[in-house]
Image (cartoon, rainbow, N blue to C red; front, top):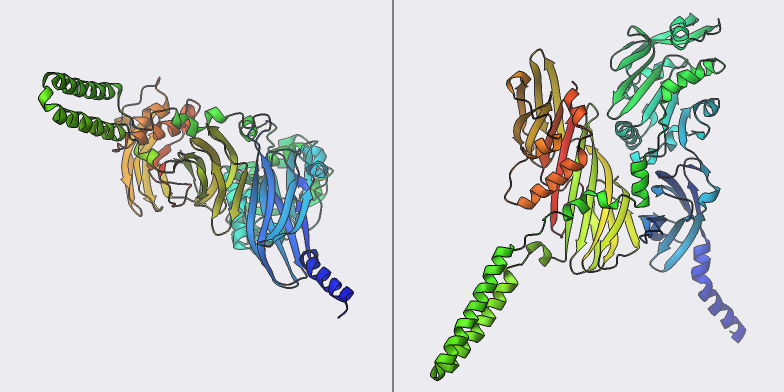
Length: 633
């Protein structure tokens, strides 16, 4: 072969990685149809098309977190392992936090050989909204709603198969409007995500149309506040016109007939509700018995949709400040570390130790000066004393926790959402590196999300974090210098660890509790009418029945805060440092603001002395979880 032919072969071999990479295309879409909400978690849809040889790699979405002003700006990369055969075209959905438009979102595909494809999403070009309404309808007939609801409200339409498969994918959604679409077509993961989002505080608006039988399907019927019966044609709706003070056009309207089974009626009667709603955890499900498209030109439409949406125009400053890193000192982990969590000897013990050490050496030297003939023996005694007291000094102030490379703190609040089967878990994690190094944390819930992270201490903290999404959620590349603390706030929705049934009776309350979680619950206490009723402990699978009679129980002192009264009832443990964590959690969750709420509705409080957020690992964990369940009064 000629020399120039060999040169071409060598050149092609050198370009082969680039040619292979060029045969992988990467497409990415930010938000729901390009619409995002700041300070919320937004979906990122990534489509990968592999025209080259099969490859196994890591697909990642990189976002910036923290505050440049505070000096804790860091990068979090959400990763997922992917396998792409030849000519494969796959779609992956990530849910990532978007805090500001200063830095772009970067999507990349890499293999052990290097970077294969990369794409940057400019947040300044995205559509931003203060409220985002998701329309799951057969026709795009909600355009009239944007000017009625809010000047920064955007309407986004999606097909049922495109709905999120994790509850965090709905974080940027204000409300979901469903009409003429079957929920039976959703996958189990999609339906679970919708229910979890509702339980966390979402709003589902179900409107009727001619396809009324879709409202009788099992999944939707389990959510609706009404039992749908049939369809009826009516001439005008006087109940709707009277409620909003605006007459309806005298045209025939199709109305879905039903009767109330849960919740309350806003317009109409329980036998024929026109507008009804029911709570679902912290959220609500709203039913409209007529097609909203038939009321598009009605002057009372604004007031109607104000009742349907119930938009909260206030700003969640607590979450906003947390995302910006302005509430670090109020974080429960920092409050816990300000308390005596580590066991060291008291001043009296140290003083007695020094007195014994100095006295022993003094006596030995005094005797050494008097008895010159036995100097060698006393020198040996002095040496042995110095060695012995030195070894004792090493062991005396030894804090066993600090003998590990790092220690974890898992402080969690677990709110059991009644009648949903889910629990809302807020975990406050602290990783304290004693010697420094790189660590990894595994979380119990694969759908857990991180809301806030920051670092404190004398050492440096790594700015490159990785959030792996697979069978479990894993936080990796936690590089920390010696005596440095990294703090996380984690949120998840899991199966409720406690099944609670409360039935009021004339003299009080009948209560049935069942621990269906993997850990024992200790110190269960019922707060009812300003009084505390101890219920004891529940082992996994155990069930107890109690009849509560408030008149026979003395009330707590009204000047005492609820968390202080509960602290006196917490289970006693051998480790007094655990009581410190319990005190911090009680004060953080209750304070004085929930005292009034507890006076009106029964509240169940229990403790799980095990990690509620972290999965088992090699590092020692100081963990306590506060389990709360609000009961129907």
